[in-house]
Length: 107
Image 1 (cartoon, rainbow, N blue to C red):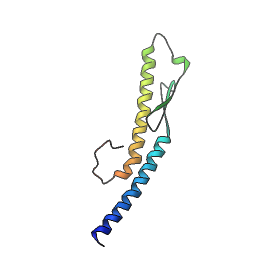
Image 2: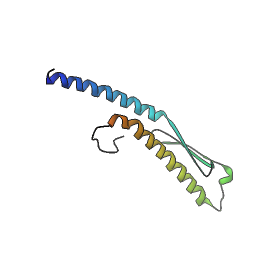
Image 3: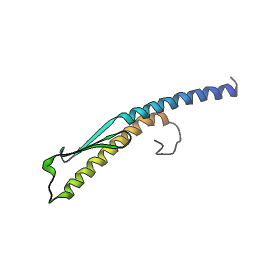
Image 4: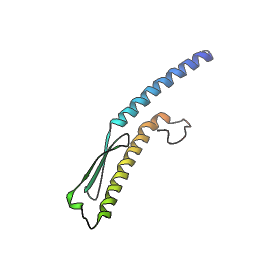
């Protein structure tokens, strides 16, 4: 096979991989993630684009004398849901970058 034929094949393979990567990324963006803190007192939901879509707070955790605890629970649940998204994104998109020397944080 000629050098030109090899390049054409390689380009076709790259285009196929790119389509699969885009489909996987679209699927990730459509996913919903949820995390709780304080035994379910605070629940934070987000989509795969790392956009917070909902925050639920149980009435019994709202104490005007201890707002700091509520703030900590919201932070904990928010950080947890964002970590879930990051982990899922790395797992899903990492399959496309195995064996490649790409700089971290590409996805």
